[in-house]
Image 1 (cartoon, rainbow, N blue to C red):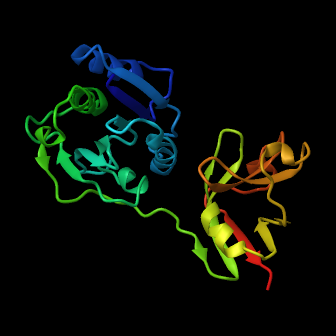
Image 2 (image 1 turned 45 degrees about the horizontal axis):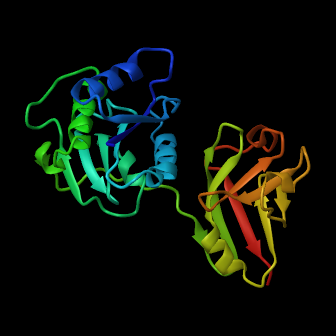
Length: 257
C-alpha cells in the first residue's frame, strides 16, 4: 500500500489538514495517509526537522513525506521534491530538508515548474497532487524541472575532545524533557574507563540511568533515548521549567583525568 506521511504546522482547529488529505484521496483513494504531527509551532523549522528526522526512517523506503511547515518561506523559495535515503520529501525549499540528514539528496526537482500554480494554500494545490502522483508510482523526475541544489541549514553540532563534550538542547518535548545533540556513540567512546560530570544550568550529575524510573519522583534523570541522544528530565516534573533550561541551552560533560 502506498504511504504518504503528513507533517504540518496547521494545528487541529481548522479545515487545513482535512483539505490536504481530501485532495490526496481524490487523486488516489487507495493511498494511506499517516499523520506525523500537526502541532508543530507555527513556522518552526527546527521543531519540524527534529520530529521528521526522529521518525522518517521508521517508515518503509519509498514512503512519501509531505511537509507543510512554513510553506510561504522566503520570497523566491521553490516548492520541491527530493529523494533522500530512499524516501521522498515534498515541501517548501526553506532549509528544513537539510536538517534531517547529512546525506545529499539523490534527485531534486521544482514541482511547480511545469504548470505553475499560484496559491495561498500550496499544501493542497501543489504538495498534495505531487505527493499523490509519487505515491501512485510516478517518477520524481517527471514532477518538475531538475534542481542543482536545495537549501541546507546547519543544525547545532556538538564539540568534543578527550576532556570534554559540549552540546546543546535541541528540543524541549511535550513533557518538558530536554533532548540534546549529545549522542551515545560519542559519549561511549570518550567516557571509556573514565568518570564524568554532566553540567546543565546550575545542576550537575555523575549518573546516567536506563529509564525514567531510574530516578525517584521529583529527581533529575539523564538517559539516552531511543534515538541515541542524551535526554534530561525530572521524573513526574517539567524539567524545562524547574531547571530553567530551554532550546539551545548548553549541556557540558567533563571527563575525569
